[in-house]
Amino acid sequence: MVIRPPIVADAYSWWAGEDDDQWHWLWNEASYDTFPRASMLEGVTEFIASLEKEWQAGDSARRMFGVRERASDTLVGFIELRICEDKRANLSWGVYPPYRRRGYARHASALAIEYARTHMPVKAVVGIIDEENMASRRMAEAAGFVLDGPAERWEYGDETDGHMLRYVLPLR
Ligand SMILES: CC(C)(COP(=O)(O)OP(=O)(O)OC[C@H]1O[C@@H](n2cnc3c(N)ncnc32)[C@H](O)[C@@H]1OP(=O)(O)O)[C@@H](O)C(=O)NCCC(=O)NCCS
Image (cartoon, rainbow, N blue to C red; front, top):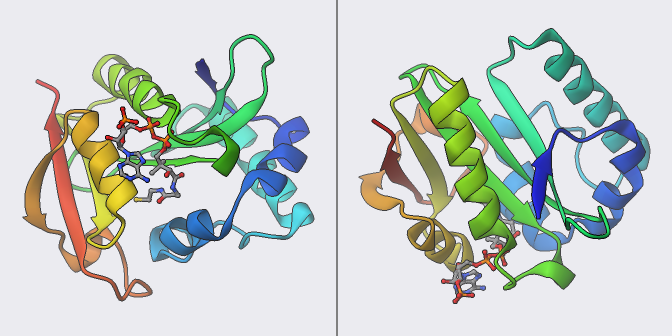
């Protein structure tokens, strides 16, 4: 598999791939309030166009990658790094249902962590995860993150009501 910035031509696959889990655990979080809410192809297209501009500008706090099967180039999910105010990078992930439990998130995390280590001025990568999201918590642990305790409100925003946990992976 490979990770690569998404392009507008990916919009349909992105839109069709998302499921309720992804919507529930990710896009209702305030940190994603720029996302145009799932299920609207037009909104997803606009969102990916804005990502293209961010990549072209090269100075965004966010680095969003599509996760793709290497042989077919099929989009199977995304992985995102976002520089936080405490000089750590927040890592988020999502894999479309037919491709889950095949190691995509774990492999994509390893590639994104390496990207953060070599391209971003950050000292650690963090994952902010709802305590009830066991798939994501286990994924974080499989990727080498260690539970650091409850996350602070600024790390996940006002719209999230769950109990959020912070997982940390030091880089240096
Ligand atoms: C969390 C998510 C990204 C995992 O993606 P994935 O590609 O299926 O994960 P991987 O196949 O790389 O799994 C790596 C490890 O994570 C753990 N894991 C993954 N899914 C799991 C599940 N449903 N239950 C328990 N453990 C799980 C396992 O330890 C797994 O290793 P194993 O398969 O060898 O046992 C995927 O379930 C998803 O997209 N969920 C909805 C979106 C989401 O919750 N994003 C995170 C918000 S914080």
